[in-house]
Image (tube, rainbow, N blue to C red):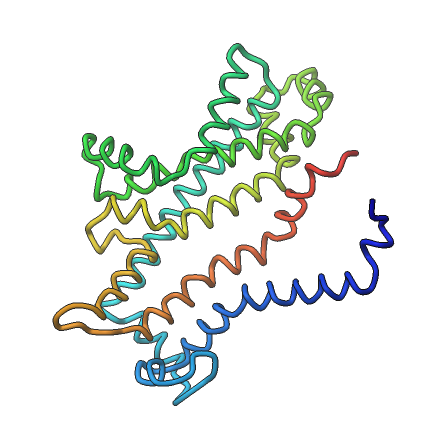
Length: 288
């Protein structure tokens, strides 16, 4: 059996460093291509090497065209995406937090059955539920509405499970009992005491939910047909499809620039919340 000194000798360390460098390059290469391509005109984009600059620096002109093309429909898609994220991801985070906390701190008949259902829901891929969800919303007359995106986004089995596991150790039972002795109700205890202790886990669930809703493609693809309701994922795909068919109008430079604008909010969210995210992920492996 290998000893720690054998596992972390200089040769193996150099090998691991080289492997990590390759993985890092693989992960960042598409982003580098995206950023460089967003500075090119349509002609330069199609007639130059993708990983180097060519032609006039057209980033600001591309941004202006992206925001004004087709009467500024990109801004409408951006606003739709923000709405879906705020309502869907925000609601999913709140529901997962309250349900996970309740399952972690209260005992009731059928708790094991709920645990099994949650685990089963995590194991089911979203694409398997796409057709049943569409048929159900079609019968309810909710297709091609914002509710067809918001309501399914409110369900986050993984987020519920994450808060459930995190709350078991993050919120001491003795603290809850002390609050009850002092006369605090359950809701007051949750919002004034427990929620602060659950903050790292809640932020972690919020980040996962935000990314899931922001990048959601398949659900709005089958639920929506009104361009004014599209999120960014479907809208940019529609722009990309303009390059095919009779009378095509390729606007790849706007698609790429729009993609850059689309990822900026997600990057900012991770940069601003990463300390909560990291502590939330590590809390399960650190015992007091």
